[in-house]
Every structure is written in structure tokens, then in C-alpha cells.
Length: 320
Ligand code: AQP
Image (tube, rainbow, N blue to C red; front, top):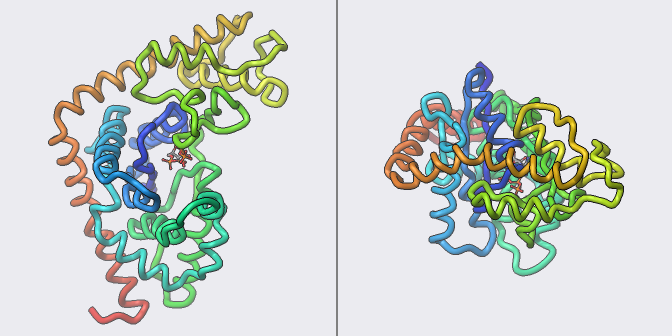
């Protein structure tokens, strides 16, 4: 079985894009891949944060993944902070990474443009490499904006193997076939994002139906007035059509007005999210189960992670 690792940042505000672009493909892949779902809670520390919010967000993301269908019997659900081999390997990989390589990362450049920058923001792509390499992941589903970081992980693995001997599996970035790219509803030229300053373009996975209705009714369209799939001329309408197709698994037909399209999209999104929200509420009542699932995920992946670190230490010249 192919070993696959899918990562989720632990910032709150998980949205419809995360569900259709990453969570659903992960749930579908459970039957055929040896899957790890990793919450990257260490990444939340690279910027100013409230400790209580970091803890709450990690639990929320874990709970949402389970509510969306991640099956702990098939997929190891883990948080990177709970497995010390991630941070140990991070340091060892920093020792084979150039300062310039890290400083060139587009996300670092964007996020460091304003304010005080923490060193961890610079080195976080190396931690991401450790997150992947420590488990020997062969496939890593990534969106476009993580492509450069995945490339760095591959570069580091290849360099290490060439210099110190075969140590790491070199991961491949994949785009799951079923993944949809969901655009921002208020600016359909940008992807729907957790960190967009305004929530107007985002449908949160825990948004109540009324809020979803309001957000979709205000979605930007155009003045053309014809419901047509045309990403260039009608990006807003196209985004709504794609959301509808992804939610219903059918090609939308027979829609003659933007009002009708928005009503259909609303119904489809509400129907898709209702069972996830219901399951979330049940699970949120039992945080012990979520903690237990994370502990089991850790126990399952740890022997392989320990073996990777042991191999790496020996290859790079450290004593036992
Ligand atoms: N709009 C999207 N459409 C489809 N897939 C998406 N993903 C994110 N946005 C969309 C996918 O969700 C997974 C988890 O993403 P992440 O937690 O690593 O965050 P991200 O990729 O940086 O995107 P976000 O969630 O919008 O956060 P910000 O605002 O920080 O950029 C990934 O597989 C991602 O491709």
C-alpha cells in the first residue's frame, strides 16, 4: 500500500475548500492507501498566538477530521507536536539546508513582509520536510501554494541520501483526482482561504445554515446573466457551478438564473455539511475520544518514526 500523508494547519476556520480539496480526498483514499492525517499544530507557533486558542484549534481540527469521515481504524490521526521525532529530525534536516533556500520560500517572503518575524517562520518548511520524511511518506497531497515546500522536502531528501547514504524515501506531491479547488465567494480570482481578512468569501465547516445562505446569496457573480461554466469571463458563476458539482457529485443542468443557482448551491452545501456538523457536535461532547484517537495514532506511527531518526542520526555521524 502507498504511504500517504495529508497535513492540515491547526489554525481555526476550516472551510469548504479544505473539505472538498483535502478532507474528502483523504477519506476516499483510506480504502487504498496507508494514510496519515497530520495536524501541524507546531506551525501555529510561528506567528503570535494565544496558547488556549492553539489548543482549542488543534482539537477542533482533529474533531472535524473525524466528523468528516476520517476513520481512526484505517488512518493514523496525529498532531506533529506530540511526536518528538518530528522536531528531532527537523534539527538534523536544518543541518543540510541552506539559509538562502529557506529564505527564498514565497510564503516566508509574503508572511515576513510586515512585523517582527520569528525564526521558526523561516525554518518551518524544513519542519514540514521532517513531518513528511520521518514517516517515509511516498505520496503527499498538496495544493499549489504548498508545492514549493514539497519541492524543498524532496531536495533535502535527495541531498541527504546522496551525501550520507540512502536514508529517506523521496516523497511525491500528488493532486487527488477528486479534489476541487474552491474559490473565494467575494473574490473568485483567489482561493477560499482561512486567513482571508474578511469571512465574506468563506463557508466555514461549522457555519449554521442561515449564515451559509447569507454568504452564498452575497457571492460575487457578474452582469452577463447567463449561467455558464466560463472560468475566464465568469469566475464567480463558474465557482458556484463547481461547488454545486462537487457537493452533489453531478454536473449541474437546467439552471437559468443566478438566483436559482445560488439556491441550489445553498441547499447542496447545507446538505453536505449537516451530517458533518451533527457528528462534530456528538464528538465535541466527548473530547476524551479525540485525545484517545490522537494517542492511538501516535502509538501506531511512532516505531517507524523512531527508526527513521535512528537511521538519520547514524548516517550523519551521531553516537547512539
Ligand atoms: N480553496 C481551497 N480549495 C481546495 N483545497 C484547498 N485547501 C486549502 N484551501 C483550499 C487544501 O486544504 C488542505 C489544508 O490546507 P492547510 O491547512 O495546509 O492550509 P492552506 O493550504 O494554507 O490553505 P487555507 O486553509 O486556506 O489556509 P491559508 O489561509 O493559511 O492559506 C491543503 O491540502 C490545501 O491544499
